[in-house]
Image (tube, rainbow, N blue to C red; front, side):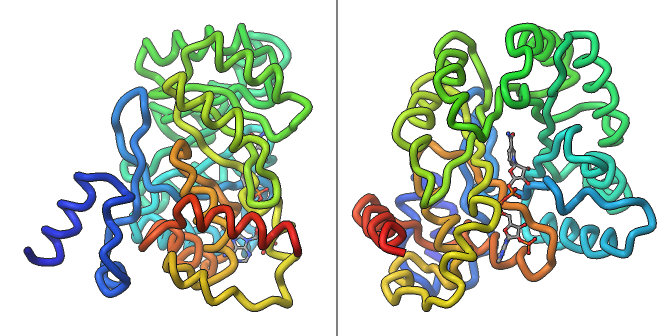
Length: 304
Ligand SMILES: NC(=O)c1ccc[n+]([C@@H]2O[C@H](COP(=O)([O-])OP(=O)(O)OC[C@H]3O[C@@H](n4cnc5c(N)ncnc54)[C@H](OP(=O)(O)O)[C@@H]3O)[C@@H](O)[C@H]2O)c1
């Protein structure tokens, strides 16, 4: 069996089965993928989040760097870009750059609706179509449970009309977890988006498994706790045992922890510098930590 056949055979069996060794993965082009439960469509386990760093005015030189980030990300097989109307200019920056690069078809664009009234939500969604310069948005999530019932009804209609492909809910506030769980139990959702990180593990114990039970995909926001985890280890060496799951940087350490949760579909680290692109996508290559290794990672971070 040649390398390509070996990779294909491994992928057919699922991520866990693709662990024959490092040499294979050093050359492997394909990023680890997970299926969206409601459709079976596959997505790479690492995407990009656009909060704060993509809120860049037209003409700002930072746009050139963001353009290159998106070009390299898509070129390496990345697909998921998460944004929101509340991220300042980020949504339109994504739309402009994706259109300019001709990348719309290869990307999975996720945004949110966060309005108090249904009519306001509808206007916001129409604005998202204009900002993202697309006829179809891949996923819209109700942002931070704002007017959830009415917006979910609206999103369901939009999915039926073919204007969006998936919908769900998002939060990053643990004070919203109880209500978030209620919505997951009550509604049929394609996706949830929630904060989960090596030092912020509550969602991994309850909400993420619940989403899986209910057939929803899981996007993980704040995978570095807005950079908090990376700052916590900045003067430390990566433990030698990180090599056992093909981890070469702290960013990969934290991302591999997240995407090795069996019910996680993808993580969306804030990625606005080209040097972060291969680093973060590296978490979607090679072996992932198993359950024993995940416990070791938790014990490690608890002592930092
Ligand atoms: N309620 C919600 O729906 C909700 C809430 C929060 C976030 N989100 C989504 O989740 C995404 C991720 O959250 P976030 O961007 O706030 O925080 P994050 O992903 O936890 O951390 C992002 C920060 O980590 C640093 N970083 C990224 N890759 C790195 C690498 N390879 N090496 C070193 N540093 C690296 C960057 O810092 P520098 O840029 O400073 O270098 C970046 O700003 C957001 O962008 C947004 O799309 C959704």
